[in-house]
Amino acid sequence: MKKTIAIIGAGPCALMLGNTLDPTKFDIHIYEKNASAARKFLVAGDGGLNLTHSENPVQFLRRYTPALFLKKAFDHFTNHDFINWLTANGLETFVGSSGRVFPKKGIKPIEVLNLLVQKAKNNQVQFYFEQEWKGFDEENNLLFEHKGQQKTIKADLVIFCLGGASWPVTGSTGTWLNYFKNKNIATKTFLASNCAFQINWEASFIKKAEGKVLKNCKITCGSKSHLGEVVITKFGMEGSGIYPLSPEIREQLKVNGLAEIQLDLKPNLSAEKILEKLNATKSGSNFTQHLKTQLNLSEAQIFLLKQYVSKEDFLDLPKLIAHIKCLQLSITALAPIEDAISSVGGISLEEVDENYELKKMPRHFVIGEMLDYDAPTGGYLLQACFSMAKYVGDLLNKR
Ligand SMILES: Cc1cc2nc3c(=O)[nH]c(=O)nc-3n(C[C@H](O)[C@H](O)[C@H](O)COP(=O)(O)OP(=O)(O)OC[C@H]3O[C@@H](n4cnc5c(N)ncnc54)[C@H](O)[C@@H]3O)c2cc1C
Image (cartoon, rainbow, N blue to C red; front, side, top):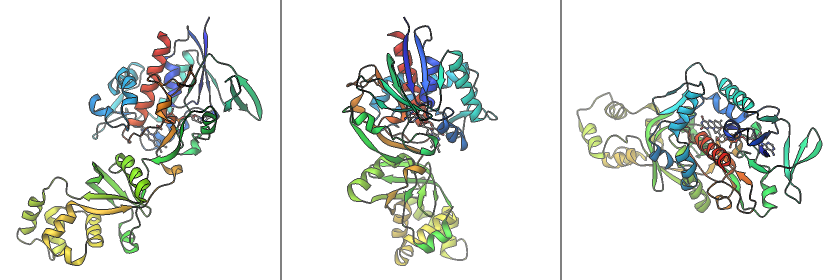
C-alpha cells in the first residue's frame, strides 16, 4: 500500500521534494496557503536568480552557521550535483564573475519555477492551493483552513516546508511557531539576516554619500572579515560585503546593544605600501586630490574619511593610514525583518535528528528556512533548501 505524504508550503524545498519522491511508493500532496507556488522564489529572481555558488564544496559548507546540521544533506547533494541536476532537467546555468550560479541568460525565474512545478506534476504530485495549515489536533492530524472552511488531513508522513519570516508578503510569515511550541518543540524568535544594518550617519555625510557604493572593501566584525562591496543608504549600509557578517553583528547587538565594524578601504595594500605611495611626489592640486590619485580612492571613500577622521588625524600620515586600514563604525540595529533577504530563528536545530525528523514527533520532518540556521547570500540559501529536500526525498524513497 502506498503511503500518503503531506508536504506543507510550496516553496523551493517542497518543489525539490515533489521532484524526488517516488510516486510508486507515495501519494504526494503539497498544500500551500497562497494561490500559487513559490512566491519568494520569484521575488528572489527579481535581482537575478542566484541558484547556488560554484565554489569548492568543502569551502561551500563553511558558509553556514552552524554548518554541521547540513553536512549529510549537502554531501548527498552538493552544489555541483545541483548544477548537474538542473542541466539534466533541461535548465542550463552559467557561472557569473563572482562564482555565483544563475540560469543561462534569457531564462526567466518564472520559467525555472514552471519547470519545477511541471516536473512535480509529471511525478504525480497533487497541489492544493489556498490551504493554510493551522496546527495539529489531539491525534496530531493536520488542521487546515480553506476559504473559511476548516478541514482535517491525515497523512503517514508530513514534511514541513513553511519557510522563514522575511519578506512576509510572499506568504512566509512564520506565524506557525506557536503550533510547534504547543507540542513542546523548542522554537526561536525570528530575526533578520542578510539585511541592511543601521548606522546613525552624520546628516552632512549622508547628504553627499547616499546611494554611493564602497567597492572592494574588507569589513570585519569580531573575528570574522569579508571582502566585497556595500551600498551606503540613509538607513545605514547593506550589500554582499556585509551580509556574511550577519551572525556576528546580531550577536554583538544582542550582547552590547551596538555592533562595532571595521572597514579596510584598501585591503590589497599594506600600511607600508600606502605610506610609500603617499610619500611619492605630490600629485594633484591639494592633499585630498593626492590621496585620491595615489590610492585610487573613490569619492565615497574620501567622504567617509573626511567625515569620520578628525582633522588632526587626517593630516598626520601614520594616523590617517591607520584609519584607511581600520575605520571604525557602529551599527545600532538590524533592518526590519520585512525587508530582510532571509531570517534566522524558527525550529531549533536540536529538535530534529540528522535526517531532519522531529525527535518528539516521528514521521514529521522540518526542512528549509523554517529551521534556525544562517547562510549568506550568494546562492547558499537556496542550495541549503534543495540539498535538504533532495536528501529527505531520497531517504524516504529508500526506507
Ligand atoms: C528579496 C529576496 C531575494 C533572495 N534572493 C536569493 C538568491 O538570489 N539566492 C538564494 O539562494 N536565495 C535567495 N533568497 C532566499 C530564498 O528565496 C529562500 O531561502 C527560499 O525561498 C526558502 O525556501 P523554503 O522552501 O524554505 O521556504 P519559502 O520559499 O519561504 O516557502 C515557504 C512556503 O510556505 C508557505 N506557507 C507558510 N506558512 C504556511 C501555512 N501556515 N500553510 C500553508 N503554507 C504556508 C508560504 O506561503 C511559502 O510559499 C532571497 C530571498 C528574498 C526575500
